[in-house]
Image (cartoon, rainbow, N blue to C red):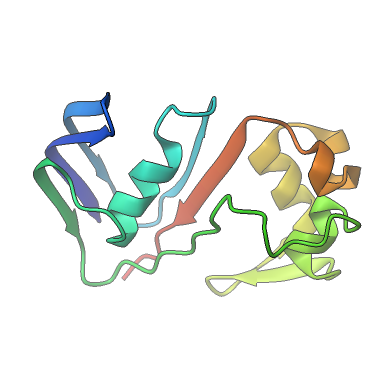
Length: 136
């Protein structure tokens, strides 16, 4: 379980969250979609411990297994499609012990069937961050 208790976070002079509280239960799959600067990456940095809240508390349960892909693209090959970069060319991925279709997973996360054929350079401006929590 992941819990946020009255979390406040600023990025430079911009207030991203104030008194944010929520609980993510075991077994949940979470995706955050929003425009640039909305605070998606900061939220996941708080979850992964790469950032600390300015106020409040982030509680990560002992059995939480976080899978997270950062939005930075510097190490990606701009000649690869999004699907090739995410799946390494594999049609079936093993995610937390479950076999899933790599293309179906990518489409579900991006909500655009054509994105799996797009190259990184033309990836939508809206970025996607996701994590999954394994049940104990």
